[in-house]
Length: 216
Image (cartoon, rainbow, N blue to C red; front, side, top):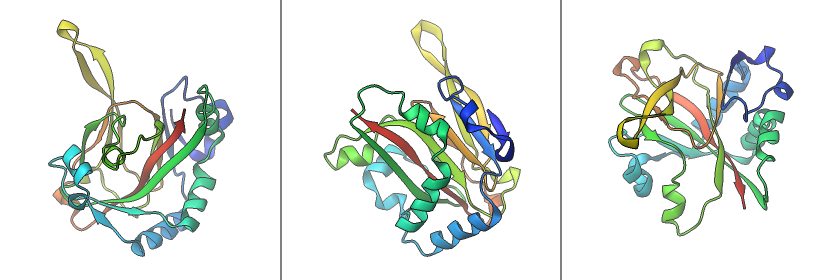
């Protein structure tokens, strides 16, 4: 489903029936500004400085990642903790724990994310831990401006039957990183982030992305 947030009724939506939710104009301009200012105060880590992640996502530029401070994290969860999210998360049996993991991301010219389905947590496994199960992935955008020819789209795929039992991937959604928009989709689902074009100049694709997870 793709809909303007002002027209969205969360209690009428189900991820079990529709695996992708795109809400346009989810964030007000003042909220986007607040998160951009928080990003400016953050300490960023480059992809090259995260060896397990860089190994999993080779030739993807050198995008940046930063932790969200507690205050902004609380504000974020107050907004994105929609009833349809809670309903889907509680639909899984034998849950013993619920987890979230969201971070700031900054993509500049040449940065991208190759195709994956979010089932392999390279960073957590590298630390010798067994991660919780990712159930819903989220990406939402806070930059002031983004033009159609700047790239950075979120591409979702569906699996189709191919020759000799092999599976093919076909594009099911092309989601523009429109300022203030929010995308949530079920995991596993193959997806990628298109490379940011040189036409973007010094503009950064600023987002919060991560997962709602369960422990069993």
